[in-house]
Image: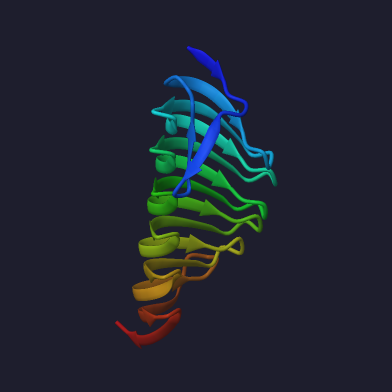
Amino acid sequence: MKTKLFFLAFLISGNLYCFSQDGQSTFIWPDGGKYEGEWKGGLQNGQGTHTSRDGQTYVGEWRNGVQNGIGKYTNLSGEVYDGEFKNGVMTGNGILKYPNGDKYVGHFLRGEKSGKGTFTMSSGVKYVGMWKKGRYSGRGILYNGNGNILSKGIWFEGEKKMKY
């Protein structure tokens, strides 16, 4: 079932509610943002695509009006995150690609690199190990572009504190 939504919406506690039948539809916000996808109970639920007025996009799973599950987010600077979301934030396993060619593959918590992950720079230099709040933290190994070990140790807040 397709339903067109144009103006019947209201905001409660930061959530957008639309007078809509459950199913597939498109909603365009007054600021130009647009959601195309599945709805349930007046909220985005299931698969959908949100494009903000300024061009940022999220394509993926929604639950109760928020990004939850697997999705792909592209921001204005060209960073692309492909992975898990929880309550609208990168949380779980994912891949973050940067416009300069750098790439992180690993775990995220509340939008930051956290847990086990690998960061590969466009130069080939690579860090494999633990992260906390977006920085090297815990056991890790730093490799040069040829795959040789540059440094191996325990890291804290991005700096090596001891060898292992």
